[in-house]
Image (cartoon, rainbow, N blue to C red; front, side, top):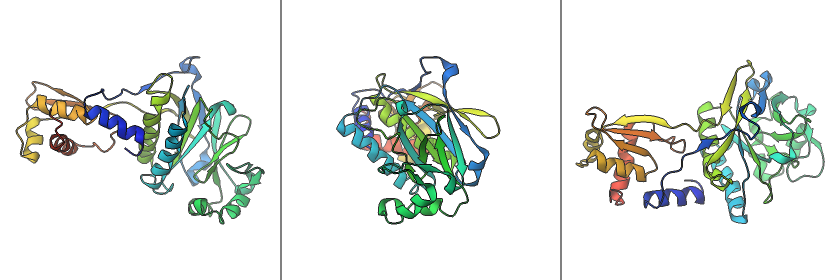
Length: 309
């Protein structure tokens, strides 16, 4: 709950005013064979090896939601992304770009583009020197400045999208008028990559014309294999009311607990199975739920706040 959208949604779910959303991957209108493709070059393994992508189609920004979108990126960067060391997010106006995209790593003197907020095309090594005097970016330079290659994302016209984790390009910047958003997420940690990608698309897909839908991106890895990102699948989990009660000291029934856990944004069902009288589906927005013991905390919070009704 790092943005107003997430807080408001969690409160509405907890108060029983709405069900937790079901996030869906939707194919482009041209069909599944026309996923936007992003190809990863082998050289990226030297500096920042992992990348994911996603598209939010027909999104409608207001000044408030636009500001919240930017603010969420910053909060993710400063927290789970460890000040961009582990993960960096780039957001782009897709309609200014021509797919397919490539994710590469090149010597900095071979990279040249107009960086966000600038008017002059500049080499990457020169940008590093410029950013030493800009406090908001100088703190990130150490991540790549001593590497012989810098990560860079291009479209099919060799137009730069982003030089992660430092700066996006001016060419593809999003505005209040942007309707199709391409999100790139680069990382040095695959687990954090998935969490941050899912958080970004889950929070702001509610502003798409069809809420909570995300168009996936096909990633072609350096070894030739492919994967589709993001992964918004639900994770199954099971436990028992007795297990949760043993920690909390309560005597709640499976039905009570299912109702309480539903209010915490989980999909929960009471069953007649003695060894698993609670079955759950964990949404992509809850990476903190890793083990049934994590459900104990949710149940306790829900009970304390009156979540059992």
